[in-house]
Structure formats: C-alpha cells, structure tokens
Length: 184
Picture 1: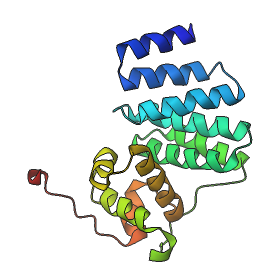
Picture 2: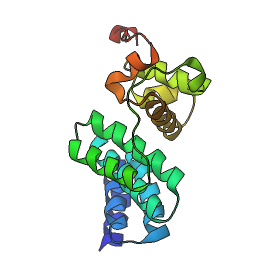
Picture 3: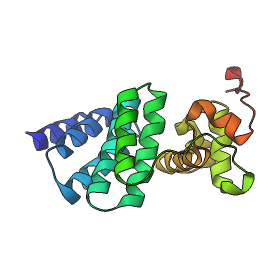
C-alpha cells in the first residue's frame, strides 16, 4: 500500500504529496531503504511549501542515518530539522530532534557570538540574506545554487551560531533590515 501511495503521488505530481508519501513509506522500511526513501522525501518536500512536513522528514532522516551509523550526516539533518521545526513552532518535533542528538552524543549549541572566521564565505552570504528575511528558494535563485545547498549552509550557520532564525542576526552581528517588498 505504501508503494502504491508513492506511485499515486508521483502521478499527481505535487512535491508535497510525493514527499509525504515517501516519508510515510520510509516508516515501514528499515536501514538503507528507509534512508533512501527519506532522502527522496527531503528533496521533494524541500521544493514544496509544506514546511512542517519538510521538518518532519529532516528529523526522520536524521534518526534513520543515526541508526545506520552515519552520525555526521545524521547531525546535519537533525540540526536542519530543528531549525525548520522552530520556524513552524513545532516544539514537539524540536524536542524529538534534540533527544535524537543526545543519543548521538551531540546537542544544539547555546547562542554565542560568531566571529567572521567561524563561517565560510558562502555561509556568510546565505546568512546575510536569511537575516534580511529572504526565503531559502529566493536565496538559492540569487546565489545560483541548489535549494538543498542553501538549506545545508543555513543549518551549518545555525549550528555554529547556536541559534534558530530568531537569534541569528544578534549572534552574527548583522542588521535585520528587511528588503523593500516594492523593489521586485
């Protein structure tokens, strides 16, 4: 039934439906197959407006990667999941991701000031745009990079700064000046 749901979603063609079907299919899969399904789910949901579903898929992928021993990759996706879950005000999902990080011997960093040397130039570029309120898809378009790379860079910035979106400007010492919406 799970495979049939994925096939139907792919026929329908909406990224959110495909990603959600893949994520649900992964719930009944084990090991590398679950990781493969969740990686696809994250890719599709990252292209959709379904922020909460994307956050769940990121956390699920982090959990699956930890179970197969890929701790570094697991941490990356769990941090991304925390960031997005905080943005969606999904406190239960944030708690679940934090517990998973603790099982890996990791935990989100506390808010601290980040020096210019702590972030790579591409991370600074993404962070500066994010602080100004530019959404991730537009950041990808402006910088000419894939959306998934923007999400990875944002996750790295948040991990290094020890904060979610709301504390990023302060941690990086950046202005929160928003773009003028009439400039497009």
